[in-house]
Amino acid sequence: MDDGLDGFYTSEYSSTYSGLHNHLLVKTSISDSKFQYHLINYWKRNGISDIKRYDPKQDYSFYITKHLYKTEKNIWDFFSD
Image (cartoon, rainbow, N blue to C red; front, side, top):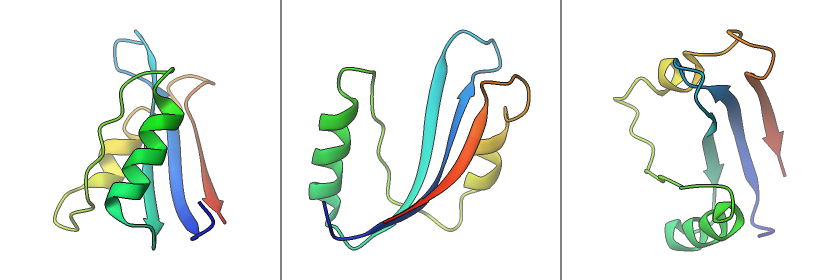
């Protein structure tokens, strides 16, 4: 996938600390279907991928960061290709 990816990710435990999970916000020129195929293929051995198109009316910034800094394993970073 050399079409360029820019985004932000978080890796965090849930509020019950029962399992680590990840959130991604991604900007890309890759088609939705191609991106979903590659992401699901990459993560299929690690868990479920729930992929949604960005909706600016939603409060994603709160949703993906609500558990940050509750433990040392709750991390975040930017990525760019």
